[in-house]
Image 1 (cartoon, one colour):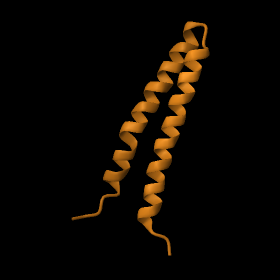
Image 2 (spheres, rainbow, N blue to C red; image 1 turned 45 degrees about the vertical axis):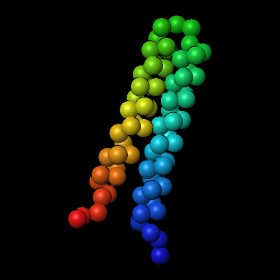
Image 3 (cartoon, rainbow, N blue to C red; image 1 turned 45 degrees about the horizontal axis):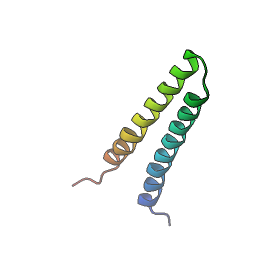
Length: 68
C-alpha cells in the first residue's frame, strides 16, 4: 500500500528541485552570455524559475489539502 501523502510530498520536492535547477541554468547562461539576447534569456529563465519555486508547491499543497 502506498501513502498518497508521501507521493504528494515527493511531487512538491521534485517541483522545488526542478525550479532550482532551472534557476541555476539561467544563472550559468547569464554568466556566460556575451550579447544582450542570451543575457535577457538568462534573466527570464531565472525569474520564471524563482516564480515556480515560490508558487507551484504552495498551489499543489492547497489543491491537495484535506477537507475540514
